[in-house]
Length: 376
Image 1 (spheres, rainbow, N blue to C red):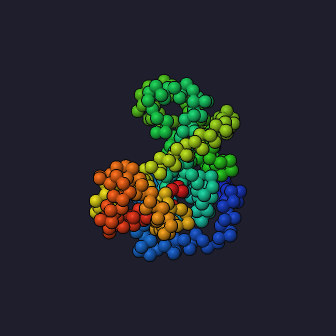
Image 2 (cartoon, rainbow, N blue to C red):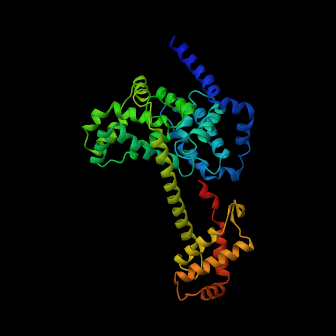
Image 3 (tube, rainbow, N blue to C red):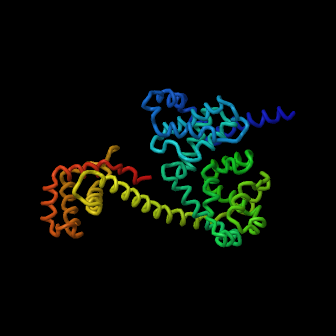
């Protein structure tokens, strides 16, 4: 009887989840897409991609489920799904959490079904989580910190008292959709809820997890003990779901939206500043008579004159009109900064002309910087 029940449940899950989520429709309209992704990337150059080695490294630490213990065929299925996902979106490639979620879904689905359900998750509900910056998951830590203050203020104050950053605990929960954190059945329910209700489900689940152990947690004053308790904490699936979708079913949507929008703008500014600092440093390593400050002025002037129409996958080019504008802005800013003895635009022009080929190399280096990165 037990065997029959398990088989029926698995078969039902395998059939219903792709059907209701819409991932089976994606499979139907692209019948050979998955196989073609894998077969068309077997050459030596493709296998040298960084994300291929990252995937292979993570395969054996993707799941503690007995299904994967010594099961090379299961690991091969997981490898295929992760590689196909990476080839579908090479800009993202492979990032944290993908292996955990895919390994979980493969307990119920075949390779192709798993691939399309992962596509659905990664490109809709969790699109801000699975990208090069992980910006969505990072911003949602701030959102959850606010929600904890609202719904469990005593626990929030206790965390501040023992100086424990909430993100240390919850960031990984969100990135793996709670797989491996709560029971397998409960994690499956969470993923189903994300598909149909959106990522805000994570907040309800996390609040319920803290609520169920709040009394014990308030008695722990040591950070190490607190973290160890959370790692070992157990949750009855039905109780967890009842608390999450009972007590924490209604969340302040306007507040969540405001925090996300504000943090997204801040995060974009920080990312742009970090990228600028990195790229200016790289350009400064070139043979040149210009200082890092002067290179930063050149960099800012160059990119201020670029637009989407002149950017390419390998960088950017300027029309003559744009170059004239750039050169004028560069000379003005350079002179205003009183760099070296160049206190007039004429002196800057002379320095540039004296530098000749070095200035051209600097412009080429600036133009090679990936402008498309600003859209992450």
